[in-house]
Amino acid sequence: MRKPVDFAAGEDRILSTSRLILRKLTRDDLDFVAELRGDAEVMRYYPKVLTREESLEVIERQLQRYADDGHGVWLASEKESNAPRGLVGVAKQFVEGETLIEVGYMIHRAFWKQGLASEAARACYHWAFEHLETDVVCSLIRPENVPSQGVARKLGLVPRSQLVMHYGFPHHVFEVSREQWRDSGLEADHSAS
Image (cartoon, rainbow, N blue to C red; front, side):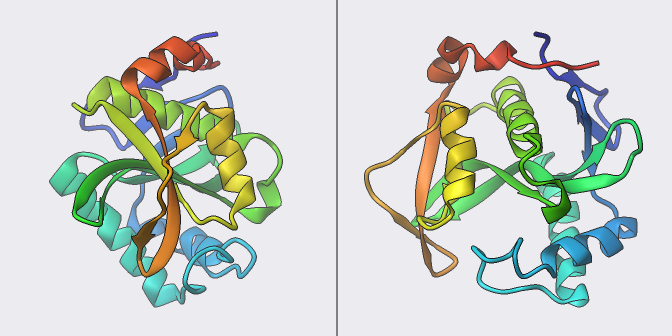
């Protein structure tokens, strides 16, 4: 299996996997982001469903992250059709006084159970270890969010023993070290073109 393809610095496209292109969000993505973040089932582990205006704020925060950090949450689109499938990316999170590098993933409900979250998250973990000076990457996951925990476990992440508070809710910190990621074999477990 080949590693995900990195695109040139400065491009809006960030990564390519066997089925997906991950690229920077733009304000033109508002219709999709509002539909995704406005779906009660998709948002059931988040504090609330977002309005269209709040979804625009999500995009604006990511644009600021790109400017400040060089990365953030990206739009995951199907390679063949260029149709959006979800939001996936690498973002700094500040949790209980600690700065964490997190891989987050949210797939549109119509495309659940197709392995897209695992495929995109795997590429994002790879990207984080290749591009950032961090020894650990994590995913913050609510205790009741069993599907996202399954993605994290499938990728070799293990939860810390203590829950943390994030946005007022308890979360598991599923994490993997650079060495564990390399030794797991998942680092190279990609199909990309």
